[in-house]
Amino acid sequence: MRRKINLLRSLMRVLLSPFAITMLDILVIVPLGIGLIEALRELAAGHGYREAAEIVYGLGVIMIGWGVALEERHELREIFGVNSNDEEWQAKIDQDCKSTGLGSLIFGLFAEMCIEAIKLPDNVIYTKGFNEVLVVVAVIFMALTVLLLIRHVIILIPKFVR
Image 1 (cartoon, one colour):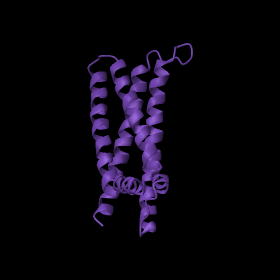
Image 2 (cartoon, rainbow, N blue to C red):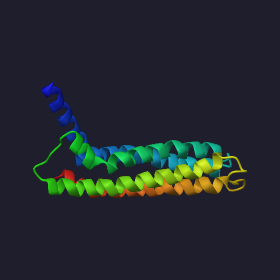
Image 3 (cartoon, rainbow, N blue to C red):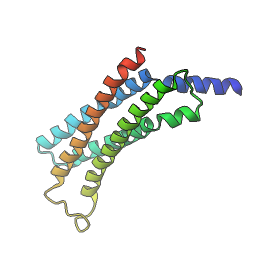
């Protein structure tokens, strides 16, 4: 049993490392960037807003999920007993992850709120004629998340070279 706990702790140490977080940031940035381009392409081609809204909504879930994971890095380290000889350094990484995660979470929620406003009946929230605008606003939140995650990668790179 002790061996399994140590194996899990070692796995979490790797997954919570600046290198792994950077790689996961990049794995999130890529579909967000592709989705952003595809959503705008759908709108520009005049195909309506529905496909673009589905893209944004699906990627919004990823933005929220990754945001929560980043935001809670410190708590995950505590839960799995991932300690470090340099807690001050880890605390700085935790703070970077917390602020980036919170931004991703909030932008993801705002993007989904735009899409949900479209889905509601017009007698609840009247969006007729504004659906495409709401999708573009949601895409802007996606773009902000991409920029935020790119910034996070730039901040983390020097930390895993250490």
